[in-house]
Length: 112
Image (cartoon, rainbow, N blue to C red):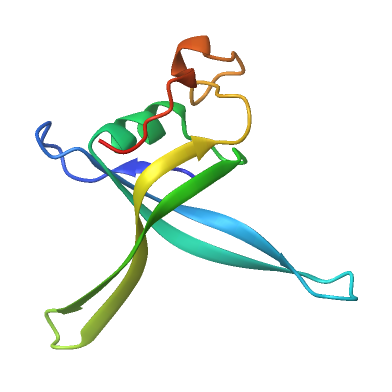
């Protein structure tokens, strides 16, 4: 997970990142990894941009969203993503780029 800010306007606060989930195969030692595109808006975007980093365990509550658009060449392009409505840190919260735990970040951004 390496969140990136979408747009440069301060009024529109949005961030997008990929979240990996492990899927274990029954009666086997095989592990399959699925990747999910996550879109965060507003307060959740601020939170993920400040505290999100690779390897952090997160619980995401959200809804599925599908988009379809045409490229300049006229080809249809599709995107499926989860729009985060709640982000739940499942590991200690550390500011991105540091190893220090941020005690103030424990006020997890939930629903507005």
